[in-house]
Image (cartoon, rainbow, N blue to C red; front, side):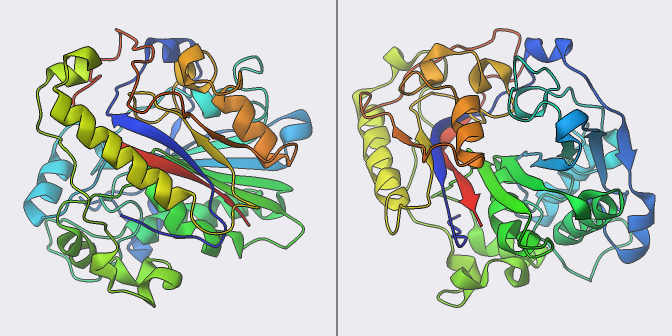
Length: 371
């Protein structure tokens, strides 16, 4: 699904859906806060339960800065998929099944591991609507699913504004995978809720999807069209904001665990897809667009410590992702880094403790938005 905000910046990654990393066991896990008051305005998860978030309060010179990170987790494009999602144990369709998540990567409060954002107010917005926070359909069945992702986003933002975010000096809206897609959708409108004196940017990690199964079903099912950027919907039908490049997802499982085992035909398709994405993300005015595009065979690099600040193979020009994002946000440097040494993907560090590592993959990219 391709969306264009006013000012877009990206980072590219090969997507492999990962589980929680072992390093997170050392991180903090703030309480899960369920927003029960949101139910009255219809801002609910797929099963009708209240939306939820986790908040770790800032301190010292970061107390007036806010970082909101939208959780990822793919999407559901049919009623059956959404019903399955709201009833399974993932918590991606119901807050009644959610568990506290450990804060790692961009969310950690460890200054050494997250030097630019460790003492900000850091919020993990939990994902339970199946629409990348875009849905808003009034009709519903008594047993669900409810399609209210956009309302969920708005309700949580309203709550955080009451808690002090309205007086923020700096705001970074970020997200990974489906959460990053939600970041792209809401970036411009969210920025408008702050005065021009507030520094505001958006980071979308592993979310530049140029393929999407059943795009019309996704948009129509969730009632998402009215929440998509007008810069897109004014030029094309909302159901067509997905490109048609095909990806070899159902190839040999050996590719997921060992890149050297991939057939040449798959590698060629990956290379062609890489060229297509690089062509897309480098179009237009690059004067305000930051780029951090590496070739790691991984998905979501901002949430996981080994990629955010640690794995040398995820670095470009001796710069970690953490440093690149920090310098970009603070306007210390116009970061536009692309791995041009590897025409295909490369195997970066894979934490063996990740229970769901390598169970799926695709190409994607991440936007960082200047506003």
